Length: 433
Image 1: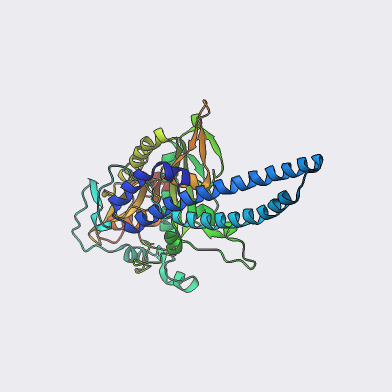
Image 2 (image 1 turned 90 degrees about the vertical axis):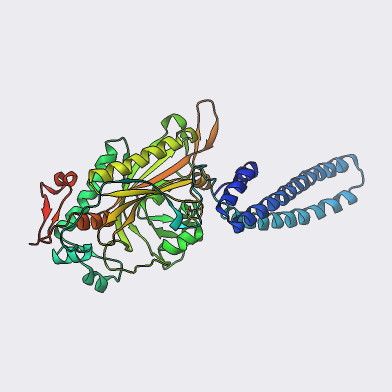
């Protein structure tokens, strides 16, 4: 979230963003926040003056005692001030609690090019690449293919763990690892630092990364025998993005070392509560999956150049795998509060005859960094909050779905993308053994 100083100085820009989103609730929150901010500043000034008066009265009492003057009125005044200070501090604390709640309802300032739309149905398609393959035989979905080839067991995982989990076996498990190595190698060659992050983070990191509703719908909290306070509550990560963001919390980065570019691999865990849920058997939507994530910290002037680079990285990966895809820009009504701009990359699925999201690119500008106090400093001493950007390199489960369905053959085997053959010891196709 932004800090009060930023909201105060950019109130008109924030109001314009909210009006473009047509979110009356957010506009009401902003107006109430600005009102409370004025009240807070008035109360803070009064509190500071009380403290100054307390010090002044103490000095007057000392002087009066030294000179033999009457101290009774001064002592009465000194006795009353602590209660006034305590009352003002209590009111200030309550105000700060209300302010923090409202701050989390104020969205990021959107990029000027974000298209208008009421909901995800109005996200704007900006590009397509590749022609979907024409099949001369009835296509199978990835579950049918994986089970017929003996590559996955969804029934066993239902027994051991529940729905939304899976066992990968043989060549499909090896394909999963091949995809991880392929994505990591692609980005390491571009100068990204490889990171394997913790699979759990503290709740404040998540609150900086996303909003409360998103946390409730997707994040698993770790229950402990002795519950910790909220700030130390551990949660399973829904993406390596969360841990990579928190990795530099509280740090001031030298501007000349930016951008800092990371590629992180991790298992990810999501509850998937909501209208979509876990409503189909298979690998497309699951509670646990493997994901390679890109994360970049920049100065403000580097921010959109980095966004374009992350965009190109997604295209390079999908084109190397020769998977037909399209790119959509997220519209005003579907853009998450913490994002300034976002694009989704969607692959073609011949079984559903539609495109499905496999990568999500976002620029969060200073919204996340402010919350975690991640700053940059220039050689001349100028300081500011860093910009943070993230983009999926690939989530292996969804890419495996796309490969199985797009590369299937009439005999039930699956040809492998040429880019992955070196990672599979020369294996060019998957057949039933």
